[in-house]
Image (cartoon, rainbow, N blue to C red; front, side, top):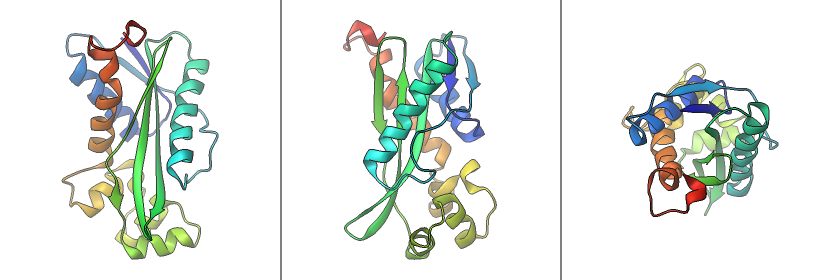
Length: 178
């Protein structure tokens, strides 16, 4: 099974590998990455923009590498809900005939992170400043930093990808998903 991940970020590539291995343990997997644009801002600031970015990445990956079984787009985003800055991600998995989507758990971010985001920093850069880390978005991300590693960006993305992949693994869904 050939899977194309629409990112060069090793956390996203590994999350995809784990999710597919979990649902398709009998299959030999080839997981590759391709760099494609999201068509949204570098730091998506709403649920709608984040979902759109994940969709755009999955479709762009399918356009860029046509000979595969699945294409995966992942986009992390933030949004203020009831005056609380929240982080989340959208996962989009597609085959030749369909797309399936899932949204991750939502993480409330501390005020110090929000202040930096409000000043124009991307979430990863804000986290790095607040937590004195470097390139946290290619590590545990905000999830890992705030939960002492109990959840990580990779684990959250992998779990969410399993949910997005469910229509491709469960026979109760239409044939177009399998």
